[in-house]
Amino acid sequence: MSVLPTGEQHVLRCGDAEAVVVEVGGGLRTYTAGGRDVVDGYAAGEMAPDVRGHVLAPWPNRLGDGRWSWDGQEHVTPVTEPALGTAIHGLVRSVPWRVLGRSPDSVALEYLLHPQPGYPFTLRLQVGYELTADGLRVTTTATNEGDADAPYGEGHHPYLAVPAGLRVDDCALVLPAATRLCTDGRLLPTGSEPVRGTPFDLRGGRVLGGLRVDDCFTDLARDADGTAEVRLTGPDGRGAAVWMDASYTHVQVFTGDVVQPPARRRLGLAVEPMTCPPDALRSGDSVRRLAPGESTTGSWGIRPL
Image 1 (cartoon, rainbow, N blue to C red):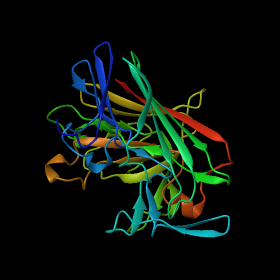
Image 2: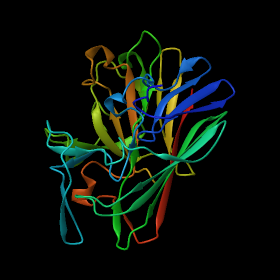
Image 3: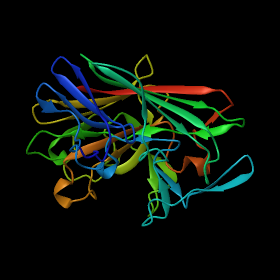
């Protein structure tokens, strides 16, 4: 039997819901509930296109020129997005994650990131997926296994599905963010602006129409537990929400205008919880400093609406 591009497929089931988590990249490939797609995933015979479902660590989003410094030392990591001259979405998207444990409705995976050129630190990364009657919960833990302080940021890259036959244009988005990061031609931050009075003020929710979004947002409104929630719904009010705990201070939203092939564009909305903004290893913004032996944990999830 040939090996699938994303390796072993871990199938989780709970009631009428099913999710598939993959070995390569440790990400989410599909999620269905009640007979409909909750995420816009991909086929078992595909490599994960457009970063679908990937774990983004030890940094999410873009790092300009792959160059950054830490405690007075300069580092250069390979540029993986040549068109923009950036190193994008970390170092663990194409590596196999081993199983720590699993049950019919959950799986826990682990990857030990060894020091390498451009990121000379040792991190133990663990990600757990649990499918419940309320939705899918994802918990990520990073532990510094080295002997020096290590910088760390993390994110995830699910695409929420839109109803069959529709596009993101037909759906309403509630995005409880007060601030949008402004970017240059390489999609690297140059500053920030309040969303009030701009097309990106989606706090009250509205139909997206032709709005193109590939932006990072912050200053998220949260409930008493510190949870923020982004909701995408079709004309019938059904859809999905991505929730994130207080460790996720930023969220990238992408309407899929440049995915390939063109026929796949604007058929799903990427909602990416992130613990820091783009280019954070260069700016230092919200980067977590992990002392030797120290761990950090964050949780987010998806719930059908």
